[in-house]
Structures are given as C-alpha cells and as structure tokens.
Amino acid sequence: MQQVLVADNISKSFTTGTTVHHALKNVCLSVNKGEIVMLMGPSGSGKTTLLSIMGGILSPSSGEISIAGQSMTGVSSTKKGQLRLQHIGFIFQEYNLFPSLSALQNVQVALALRGESGKRARDEAATHLQSVGLGDKLDNHPSKLSGGQKQRLAIARALAGNPTLMLADEPTAALDSENGTIIMNLLKKLAREHNRAVVIVTHDNRIIDFADRILRIEDGHLIGPSDSTMNPLARPSQGARSPSGGDKA
Ligand code: ADP
Ligand code: MG
Image (cartoon, rainbow, N blue to C red; front, side):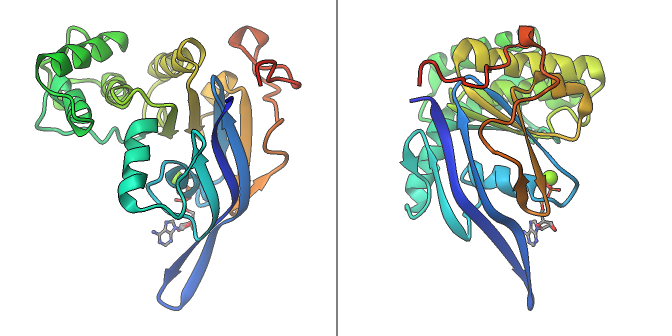
C-alpha cells in the first residue's frame, strides 16, 4: 500500500466563549510512502492544526483520518495512542527536548514509551544518534548543543519509534541555511532510503526544493488539487515523482 495517511473531508472548529472559529474546512489529502510533502500557508491558516490532526494529537470536528489503513477517528484514546506510537514521529520548531536529560536519555525516553529498555535500548538510541551525526554527543545535555544539533537530536528521538509518517512543524525556521540543509537531507534520506512519508509545515523558501509536492492552505482551505500538485521547483535529481507516479501502486 502506497498511501500512508488519508484525510477525508476534515474540518476543525475551536470554540472560545461564544465565538466559533473554523480552523479547517473540508480538507482532503493523502500522503504516500517515500514522498516529502510540504504544507505552506500564511500564519493562522491552519497548518499546525492540520499537522496535529494528522498526528492524532487533535481530533477533527468532522471527517475521517486513517494511518497505515487504520482509522484514527472514532477509536478509543488508548487505540489512538497506540497508533501514534507505532506510526508517527514528530519534530517541532522549538525542538521540545527534555533539558535535564542527556542526548542519549532523550532518545531512550522515546524507546521506553515503546517498551524498550536496558542495553538494547541504549545501543539503539546510540545508533539513532550516530545516524544524525551526534555519535560523539551522547552525554551532552540539550543546553550543550547548538540549534542544529538540537534539531538533529529531536530527529533521532522521532526516529526511535521507526515511524511510518514523520511530521515536522517548521523544523528549519530557527536554523541557518547550512543547518536547515542538514536537517532536510536527513528527512530526505528517511523518505528515499527508508520509504517513509514526511510532511513538513514550513514558511522557509530555502528548503522548498526538497518537496515532491507542495500543498497550500489558506484560511482553513487546502488550495488546488491535493494529490497531483507537483513542485515546479523540485529538481529531478532530488527525486521528484512523475505526475503519473505510483508505478508500484
Ligand atoms: P498556523 O499553524 O497556520 O499558523 P494554526 O493551525 O495554529 O495556524 O491556527 C489556525 C487558526 O485556529 C488560528 O486562527 C488560531 O488562532 C486558531 N486556533 C488554533 N488552535 C486553537 C485553539 N486551541 N483554540 C482556539 N483557536 C485556535
Ligand atoms: Mg503553526
């Protein structure tokens, strides 16, 4: 199955006092294995809300969402939590690391949530840190890491769950171009070599070349076709898919 995530007619409203705000309006999209999708749009357009719904952190007000063929709507919160642990990795602009834990321990926490502990978990955490180039920083606390290194640690932690779908909210916004490119190359490797799906919310025009598809959102509406909008800027060498796509589908 090529489709990792399917969102069908998702709407989301927030009620504050007597005011109802419609943050997402009838959003339909799907995300396939091996592709990098960027979600772009003005501030307040609903990007983070959509990403949170894709990751099972927020529930939609209406519509259905499924991950790896399993519905995340209308299931118990326990089931939803299991699907999230099994399939989804999150990366945030602000890293969201545990400041009092070392780099190694930050990754081990993610493994512990999945029932892994002891030497095996330690070795696995170290392997993930090596894969993002932090093999010599295992004992560093986040305060002893640069911004780019912190984001790489956040990626290592997200990789610990072996996610089918990696979701990233403005992962390069706080970084200089060089570090932004390092982060994007790690995410590209995840998509291409490990055939995972990557969805990135971004304002960052410096990284747009990495997108196979760009989805635009405005005022809660996804603009344009959601499944065949190719990135006109993506270079073929960066693996842009042919519009017919899906020869394995
Ligand atoms: P973006 O990430 O594109 O900047 P968001 O998804 O964070 O936008 O927000 C979309 C809209 O929904 C905004 O108008 C925001 O104020 C509103 N919103 C988001 N979360 C909440 C919430 N928990 N309660 C009320 N309104 C919210
Ligand atoms: Mg946001």
